[in-house]
Length: 165
Image (cartoon, rainbow, N blue to C red):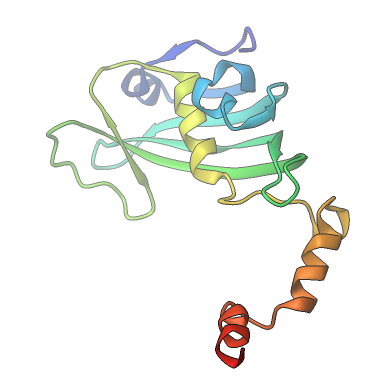
């Protein structure tokens, strides 16, 4: 994590103070995300603003950008994935009946402080593509995909040949 970012954050306190955070977090600091990466190098640039709504609810807004190497689900080679997403989170505590703004995603806290890297990791995991792949013309498996598209006319093509034989 860059030295200008705290390791732990207290969203309630930061919101009362109206704090804005800007910096970078290493992808290698995110254990769950690291399991999905083909290469565990890289940084996440983030900008976060902590605020309170008129009703006294704590919100975290901002954005993050990153570029990472995932495994292409077609050819199993590394593929570069760029993510640039906005963050709009409303803080609530376990058992709390607070109503969050409709535009905010809920973040249920059980403690006052959270690891900043864990918070950003969760946001990145939510933004990842379900099945990362190279563009077809760039993929090592492109020829196999084109060949399979030409030979089979549908998912039941094999059954048709069995029935006629």
